[in-house]
Amino acid sequence: MMSEEFTPPSETEQAAILSESAPGTVQSWRDEHTPERRVYPTLAEFGTVVPDNMFDGADLPTEKRQAAVKELRGMLADTGLSPVEAGHLLSRSAIVREGGKTDDQQRREARAVLAKVFNDPDAALADARKLIARDPRFAKFIARRGLGNDAEAILTIARAARSQRAAGKLK
Image (cartoon, rainbow, N blue to C red; front, side, top):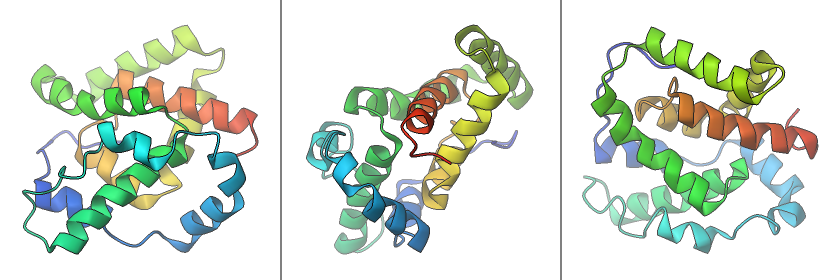
């Protein structure tokens, strides 16, 4: 999911990725699942994970920085993650960078973790990929943050994906 040569994205790059308009498929999914999304934490609850000032250092107009915050909150809500799970996922970036593991090491570790948790780790990984790929902006954000091969990040996303599949929200 991520490349061997990981360089952390700048705050400006992250905000630019996230502030892009939601693709039509994402907006359609959100419209279709609006009643169910009320079960998920509200976007305001993700304010502790994605504070209003998260991208204040980005070299972008205020509207773009605010859009990046709003969209990231929406993307996290779309996954069905709780704010605590989402915070854990986002905090993994620094841990991954400090870990210095190769992609291959991370992939082996992720496969082993998935095999311990899921009867069919390949299906769980496929569902995690589908969930992330549902919004190309989120997929790019996850990859650029170095989370694409991280075992804990993949496990968190796979659990959310399996939950969404069971609820008929991931096809």
